[in-house]
Image (cartoon, rainbow, N blue to C red; front, side, top):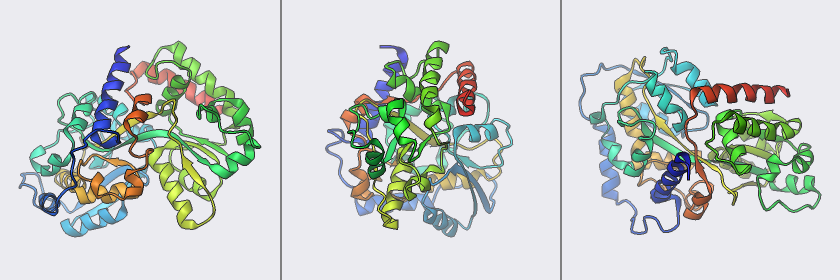
Length: 395
């Protein structure tokens, strides 16, 4: 077992113990009214600070990654005006924070990017005395983040989830002409014999090399964390074979397209795919979406709160992070975005249709087949990015 595989296996064991399912945490009980009330009190009565008081907060977050009502509730309870902007890829966020002039107070990068951004000086240390709701986070998640934030001084877990595929069941079956779904569901995306048929109803994949290449390597039976030029080229060659059949590269817009029936196969973030399924149900448009949990594996990631070094509303950033960690707020956000929240008590407060959904809370057996995304070294990322641009251009 390579070092990367070992780290990945340990991390997935940690996530399983954090509520993925199976036998982990069998003695956990639902939070009492007193415990929830206590956390809510902590959210509104954080310790005093010498940081300057301001009336604004600028958040830069993933699209469709918070329940808007929780933001409004925060504004109302704190008397703070929130400016909320969104991005659709880690690359877009990184381009802003590495300049040192992001213009924001709170951001939520993925674990694969956090380490090098901290090393570059993009963030400032947190004042944990202002975050009493840290006690709501499962300590195992904090252990995981130490892989990229060794001192634990910069980042706070937000959500974790998987990268997988969502399909329009009826359109896929129609396009395949009665051919059954493959035993290895990733064949739908990586084998031309399937993509040649599915291109007629629309294929979309994430526009992020750091998300897609590890999945391609895993499909090829290689170490998904490999950064050798030969393995990166193998991943690129695999995707090039199906490139003519891919309609679009998108890390956010696919949600509504899938929900409307404009796509039939989408490689995306699990929670986003579940949002698409929910929107289709709400629209009653007869679009039947299934979010797959492939038996041959999937990629797992975690996003975290960080405060950019140029933040001008630092006290309010701490208030917002603390508020979001409160179990009731975390559960409300979890229900809305359909991802697994970091708050250990939030799962018991979420709706059963989500907590029992294996594409949101994969069980132990699922996680044994998955792998944890790990950071790519700068040189390997540059090489992979060049390959990715060629793929998109059809070169």
